[in-house]
Image (cartoon, rainbow, N blue to C red; front, top):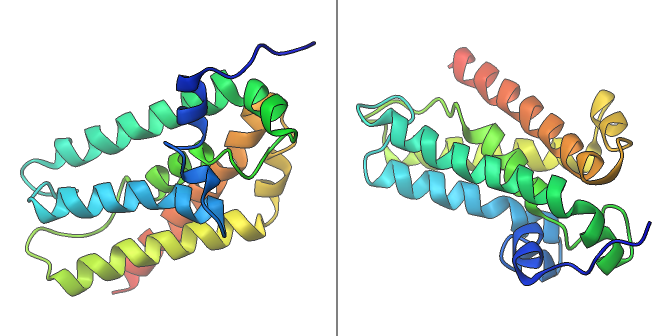
Length: 172
């Protein structure tokens, strides 16, 4: 079935406002916005476990939902426009996966900037490793049809990174 052309909104959504066109490593570029958003929220005092914890979680949840929706709604059209099922320009999946990795970031209020920076960078690196290597069942998730296949392997990578970040935090 021929898909209609990708709208401007669809293009901006699946490329995370054009980051999917950045080279090299567009998936890495698409993973950066949630890290920046989380860092800014922490910097203004909206800690994942602080008094305004809900702001941190709400903002990441909104970015997560919108990024997931972009993949599912526009995934087939984007694949048609870019000529590949999981085209490198489609990075909303990385944005969603990174949100998942950060949603329960184990940084307590009053933590120094070094610990905050370490936590953000560690979550980012863990997500990128799982996203690139796609171990075990994560790889199988990309075989789902359409935008679901584009999205689900990144959510698997985000969940795996979340677990690793939590385990490292517990070991501290």
